[in-house]
Length: 164
Image 1 (cartoon, rainbow, N blue to C red):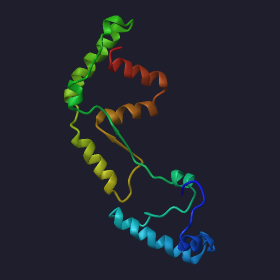
Image 2: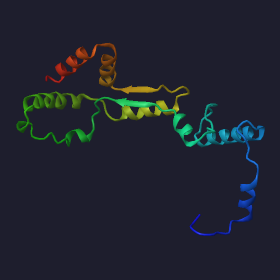
Image 3: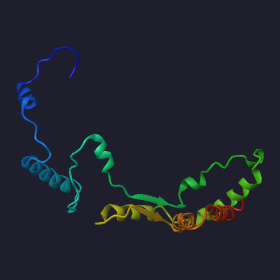
Image 4: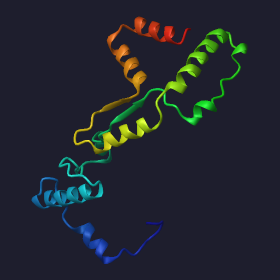
């Protein structure tokens, strides 16, 4: 719609003057079931929980289901192109250099990106996807330590790992 008076198509005027269907109206529920079936076809799933959410925009945001993919270190070409900066100018220079050395030594041993792709595929094709998927050994161990250990201990382990 633009500014000023407009001539609306008669079909639009008829539709706008029709009684609205409530969410509990049997006809509305039929429309929802038909739409859910169409969504299943679009998403190529048989999951009966693929559904139309009858709500305001906020309700749609609140109903989104997400799986979080958390990769640890992954070996990619970005690793070789990392700009480490000049640590000698920093008051933390020695610590930065030690941490950089640990990272440079660990990245060549890290898994390839294929492992992340397989995890994403598993999350997308799972009949019951998990909320969180960790990828690689370090992505599992660090969060586990953060959950199980007191903060002081978990941070000490991380500092020891990076030799800082």
